[in-house]
Image (cartoon, rainbow, N blue to C red; front, side, top):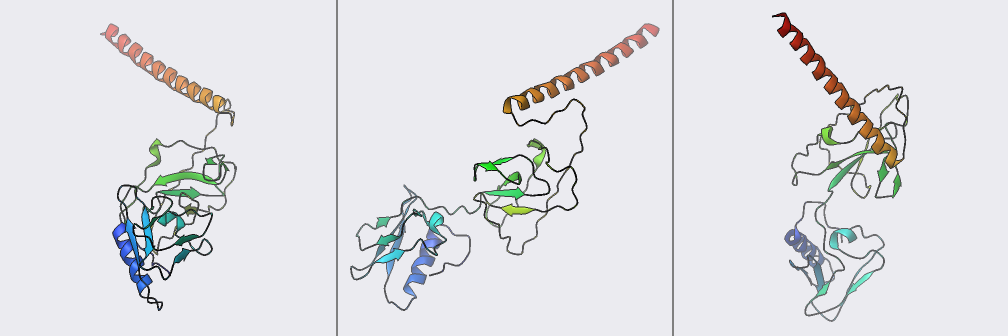
Length: 227
């Protein structure tokens, strides 16, 4: 049984599931319910004459339905229904992760617990069929591994690193690459050293600002004495 792609809530998912199940040639029916307190679905055949098995092999909706992926799940007749293992997850993609081999840095990805070609993440901050907007002004910049870039590749994946299907919808993104030269700057991967560099940069910026203010005050004072 294949549930069509779409934006489902618990009610529409239940209605689609039961309709597809009943429309098959077996002539059986089942009941799929949703517990608003636990967030879990529960499934039960409507007769003791048959049972339902959801197989791990070939099933792609385990995480959506809230089922443990380590084993097949068998459902038999039960007056109260048999609840699924976990709450169902109908949120869809909550993060858009931008990967690029050409623009890669030393960023770490918690999904794989290691270094990848991840360059940034975008939160899905819009409802279904809404416009996702993103401004990277509050994000940290990264040091690129490559010194030269001839072509730019981009991969957009969800939080589980699956490719995102935009269903023929247009999208746009702007990549900003800064060229920085500093004789005193030494790249480092140590977190403590990164903090020291950040504190040093703030201190230099503050000293420059104070120097600028002092020069302006001095010039103003000279003009006043001349008057």
